[in-house]
Image 1: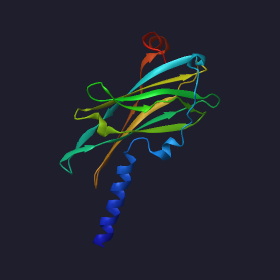
Image 2 (image 1 turned 45 degrees about the vertical axis):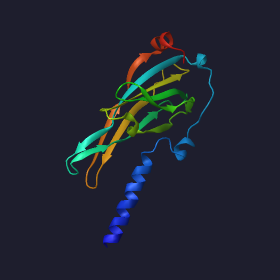
Image 3 (image 1 turned 30 degrees about the horizontal axis):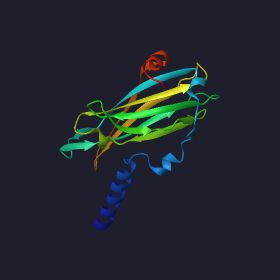
Length: 178
């Protein structure tokens, strides 16, 4: 019985460890990478998401790392949205990972998720994800949020945060080309 319990724990541990790796091939196959002339997009936004890298769990009496996922949901029934770039910054504000380098088309009513490798955020309090998206129709805005999960053998804590708009179309275009 004890051997079975240890095997089950190992399976759960390795399954969770594989989930925290960044950009697994299974997920990458789901993305619809496209080349798009960004000048045809009528609206752009830049969205900020905070990512906590770790938390203290009382049961294990040590800090434990979060697994984080970014979700982007296209609520439109008719028009796609385009995810143009997504970067992860460490606690010092330095890019530690480019989560996507090619534009991704998110079809109507489609949801995409991206794994954030929180181990890259260093020793600080966390990381930050900033993403740019655009659409051809002005009345379409995606739902963007982040889920952070931390687990131990008997505890699991989950936080959900919503994306905050940090720049709209005019500010983004004034600052740098898309």
